[in-house]
Length: 330
Image (cartoon, rainbow, N blue to C red):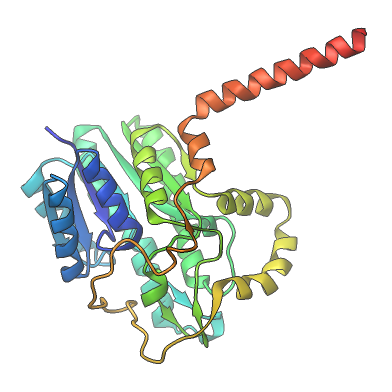
């Protein structure tokens, strides 16, 4: 029987692309998101690929709703093999312009939504002693940037939660694989409907990647024993640079962090806002940055072919050492 994946936030953006990637690979798919109309769009799309699909409209911030959704999906499609926590919400604004309710909501969706999904998945995987849980992180899980304090805080929290739980699973010798995929800027509808209090319209910081790049990384992480997968050179650069010179990055982002996240367009007064209620539209996986977005990431190629890359690096190292020895003899 085909395996089953559940993807949260699967009606649009990275979640939509991820659901499509698993369906293309022969998986049955459970779709979990708030937007009923977009869930129906996704269901039709995946069934067109030959997948068995169960869409459930639910708010991941509600633990009981997530548990009920998991029960409904397993009742319709069978046991869960992979669970992908992808749902998120953000606010583009400096801290002093964000209300306590807005901070709470972004945290409940992005962080607690991941906790709720993980717990629902574990209740089912623990009994079978197998399964894979993928928590979608970000370069911002390691290096926070201005204007996205609520989102960055939630992504940091997801990384701490994941690391803590991973140790517990190892202690219990439970055969459930827990992994994170850290993404760079993605061309998704996030920038069309996220709440913003800025004068200019928000944009992903270039270079931008298509959501299919993230989807392939998430599938890879779910089916290979990797602790983390980093997607995109900006992710690698941000994580490593923050380890070396975090103070220098603070000063750099005080200037570049504003400029890079804001386009030249003015933010419309009637722009959609999905923080507290779903936006009634039919957005798919992509945002409106197709002309700038990349379809490939060399960092993902090296992750997928890690053994070959390490072997080539060792071979080059040995060749260099041999050349050095010969040179010294001469």
